[in-house]
Length: 126
Image 1 (cartoon, one colour):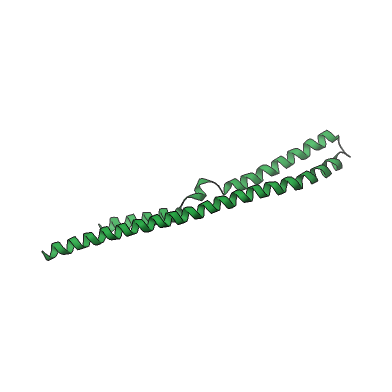
Image 2 (tube, one colour):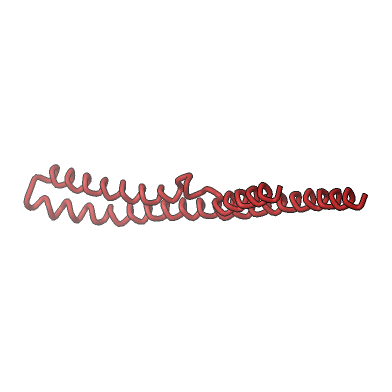
């Protein structure tokens, strides 16, 4: 009967440890998702503020550049050329900010790795 008691106590301990582990994993997941939400917020703020500042600066520079280029080419061609160049630069800036918002950057990697390790440990112990 002592063997049965030891087995029962071991199973109880294993269930208790597994429950505690799952609670810790859930807390880690919540904490990591909070960090990821903050990362998204910071990424969005960076994109919006960068675009607003770029827009203000480009309006002023656009006017000066078009006026300068109008001295060597027709004003309409100068405006078109400057507009296309600025559109390319704006596209590159938006893509860089959007890179921070990709799903692969928002995955709770620490939690996933921890759950995998815990599952392997439990599997090995069984």
